[in-house]
Length: 279
Image (tube, rainbow, N blue to C red; front, side):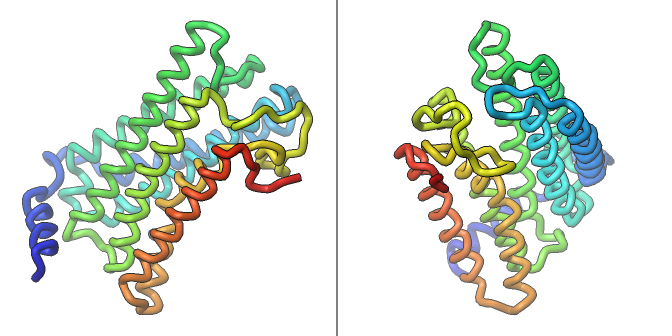
């Protein structure tokens, strides 16, 4: 056994069952949040159809709809992972705190984004008052809590020797969750520092990608943000395929490297003020 492998085994043995047992199944928490997010998605879709008001070029209910869909996918992913962890880890205090923090962030962000939509006001990059600036800061805190939860679940899945993961899937989880945390933090930091999603000033009513609303005139940071967020789904799927077709373990590493390069290139292109898709 190499020194690196010995070190990994040492970390796993030291971690043991992550946290004190609470008797609460974290997977059930994440499944409940998934159901809540799906319910919000259906409700907000109805508002999107019935209410044609807009903020600039975007329907007022489009942002809360996209957030609800994103939360449903996030929590379903976390639920699928945590339900395959061993019972001591799945009921550990650390994972329970991660789930509780995620629930609080989810409830706060969706409530505020929906409330702002109902008022026909922007929830993000709204510096019109001290209140809006404070709420935007709290949403940033909520996003940080969600990133911490993703990291905790990813680390638990990687360390838990009793988890029901084939080797490729275990590696895909570790790489995917890790990339999501690192890349999303980087791109989101640029979004916050830029105080907006655009690098450049798009013309009002200018060309945009249908449905998604991405600018086709100037740099738009959202495609890179999308790719960063969904590494946690793409890499585990790659790991499942590696296991299914008995591919070399390095295949998952290759996919992870290529995915990271793609995300970085899309991000750097946006920073240059160049749209991902030009009109």
